Length: 458
Ligand SMILES: CC(=O)N[C@H]1[C@@H](OP(=O)(O)OP(=O)(O)OC[C@H]2O[C@@H](n3ccc(=O)[nH]c3=O)[C@H](O)[C@@H]2O)O[C@H](CO)[C@@H](O)[C@@H]1O
Ligand SMILES: C=C(OP(=O)(O)O)C(=O)O
Image 1 (cartoon, rainbow, N blue to C red):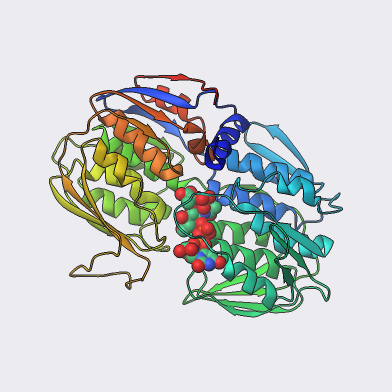
Image 2: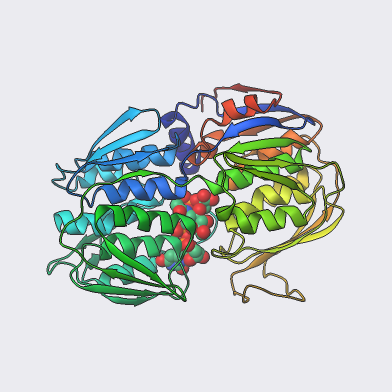
């Protein structure tokens, strides 16, 4: 069993997903209503923030996904008492944070990318921190140099002679002037979670400003932090002596909402995504509309549907917020295989995020990946060395196939492709999908998908 499969299996077991392989009888539109709860990319960071407080924090709308379970386990390893007081409501009491149990932390290596965000809070609380090997989707190199450079700027000493990384702060952490070469989401969160309790003021230039980061800032403000978001990607943080707890309802998962929207389009379906909001999806909604998708915005969610008229090709460049998010392109590409004409998706955030299209080609899609990107007549996003492009010619009929989930979003796109294709497909390695999509089996049932699933013993 390789480590990727092990991670996936562990992930599936953690959230009680018994099945590892799903058998789908496709060709039927997905129709119905599902609800999205808190974002994977916010809830997990909000849980880390609880570590900074001197009293209990309560987070509502926490999704039942394996990444949340990983962070919960890590908090518990550090002495935080975590209680689920109601479904999706986590109470986190950090008053007993005593020591970093390095051996136990290591057991979580390779599970998610969140452990690196424990550095600042642990350095403040304990004077040391340990980062195991990080997990998350294998979609590029995913270096952590911005994180480590920022931590050093605060005064941390980084020792890489361990399997993993050991950090100490012999003189405490002090505010710093930091400028990122690229607006990294995780590194911005690293700075926020470290600067709030550092002595003095921190100025972060070229910060990421994703909605999940704004929600994290809102949480930190509730805890007593002083953070101002200035024009031009500058964030100022005035360090405070102490932070309290928070009560917060997590921002909805816009990536899950966008995934179901693409599923509606690809399967000629009609899905009401309860909990989805317009503002955080504005860029996605523009592209969805240009591709021929229809949507109705209601107070309690958004209805996404195929209007029955032919889908249209689009040109998309993934980007940092407020651009088109990289996590949206994989499910959308499946829908674009049904559009009439040539679409181009330029992936500019990660260097290896189009490999998943290979299986779609085996299913009948006409997709050519240009490993070094493609120039277009008009560019909104400046060209990056690492970018790649996928050219999708449509419409093509999708054929059933047996596919193996490579990563979270690629995996969801395989599910959609299998649901859209006539015939019987199997999608294996489903555990990875449970990293970021809660109750996936229940939701497919709610949407009328025709499938069976089975447990696999590897
Ligand atoms: C848990 C979480 O929130 N994951 C999201 C987060 O990932 P994550 O926070 O890991 O992504 P980043 O924004 O940090 O990465 C963006 C780019 O910056 C580069 N980089 C990043 C850090 C660093 O130290 N050095 C460096 O070079 C990365 O290799 C990548 O090319 O934002 C991504 C971009 O919106 C999303 O796809 C992920 O879903
Ligand atoms: C890339 C993703 O997540 P992570 O950063 O957790 O691997 C994602 O959610 O698509």
